[in-house]
Amino acid sequence: MMKTLDVITIGRSSVDLYGSQIGGRLEDMGSFAKYIGGSPTNIACGTARLGLKSAVITRVGDEHMGRFIREQLAREGVVTRGVATDPERLTALVILGIRDEEQFPLIFYRENCADMALSEEDIDEGFIAQTRSVLATGTHLSNPRTAAAVLKALELARKHGAQTALDIDYRPNLWGVAGHGDGESRFVESAAVTAKLQATLHLFDLIVGTEEEFHIAGGSTDTVEALRNVRAVSGAVLVCKRGARGAVAFTGAIPDSLDDGQTGPGFPIEVFNVLGAGDGFFSGLMKGWLDGADWPTALKYANACGAFAVSRHGCTPAYPSLTELEFFLERGVIRPDLRNDAELEQIHWATNRQGRMGGDWTTMRVFAFDHRKQLEDMPGYTLEKGGAFKELCLKAALQVADGQGGHGILCDNRIGKRALHAASGTGLWIGRPCEWPSSRPLELEPELGADCGGLEAWARENVVKVLCFCHPDDDAATRAAQEATVKRLFQASRRNGLEFLLEIIPSKVAPVDDMTTATLIRQFYAIGVYPDWWKLEPMTTEAAWQNAIAAIEDHDRHTRGIVVLGLDAPEAELAASFKVAAAFPLVRGFAVGRTIFGEVARDWLAGRIGDDEAVARMAERYARLCAIWDQARAAAA
Image (cartoon, rainbow, N blue to C red):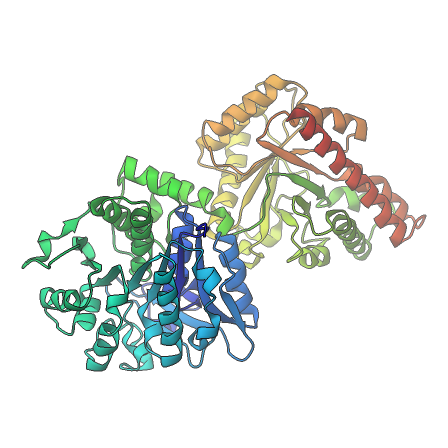
């Protein structure tokens, strides 16, 4: 059978609630970041980010947290065929914190949880036959039911020529040899656990653990003796993690000194958070192992991936993409606190965005009804009517999208709150404006607060959009003020895990030429603003587009792309501008508003048409613009 998967992991899958405050007791933490967790789930995501085709076999509950895990795995590119939904049990939770370099308190909420109900019936031979490797973790050997599922998967892996790997992953309290308050504990001696592990070690081609984990697997607190005891029952390659001293691999007999094993280069980085570092390490190791690299190279990948995890908040969110790993290995360590390395963090963010916000946005057909002042100035407007009209705009957008990707909206929270919230979860791309309408110098919506702290309350799928009226000829004071506001908003967006769209309109300030937009783009990059999206005026010459795109690509090869704005232009004029813009692949599509809704809004507010006609007319115009764009793109291909 053709192998369509590189690795299937099997075992724990949980939601990690990570304390946002650093340096305090878990008792005192007041807010938490939500991530997916559990060693097999982390490794499936970590290997997927490194370009392997990964899957996980686990169970989740039939509730919001279970759906979160399933959806997040899909966003990370992990195949979810092996994720079963348990109608009777809840998804596991873990609450974690970072106290200091030595203390990382955590509580496992796993009493009768979904993943511990994994059974032999969840193991599909056809699925196992598709993979090059199966990776199990120790926790699921602690219970007869889950152990039976793991052993069946391993047996089928061997039957179908797949390699097998074990992450010892020893958590004493998950084996019942430590209490609920000892989630941080990494080692408690137990002859019963040792016996259980040793009964399975012969089934693996690769076994990975810390020194303490080999102590439990080998039944000795002397690491060399423990490794020899493991070697006595298993011919697997043994990889022993030694913390700051790196890791060593043993392919044959265990020497008298751990230093005599095969090693890879380490990286001098700050220890910020060790939780999940081992899963990052194993992800890099699997990449090297399955690619056929020698062990020093595989360990280099593993050490680097572990370094990323140690220096960042969270487990899965910390792991690198392949692009990021290659950049890091080529450039090296600039500063030991990797999370504060601006160049590295930009690559990390830009190459892992799919894990934050899924969807294929290489085509962007956006109905922009985030307008506030333009609507407020129309006869008959009231706040209630404005909100109701924006709900009609959303209906039109959803009607045209019809469940297909590549469609989106721009909608505000001040007038369009109900529409904005209703759009969540529909599959639409959702941009949300921050600027105070028509302000110059730029001011932001008051709800954001002076420090942009209001972004903390935004839905994670909302894209921060800000419009700045600016021009290269702006005086120094105006330019400085506007750039400071944009940068403050950009930094707050990143802190809150939100994508950022920067819209610039120079033509409303002063005359423009083929270099105007490109000059502005370079100015914003120069102050450290790296938009995920650019929203640009329609430019009429190829030279202007070429200059703007060069300015972007000179600074950011991983940008999401550009959308073209409409400025209330007639449809024929938009069609002409689309024809020019569509010739450039980095221009993903359009974001047009008043051309679609302007006339309709005036008629509806005046009572000349009803809701159904308003929706029908807007849907017709939006669909027509979508078709015009698609035709322009097809013609340019």
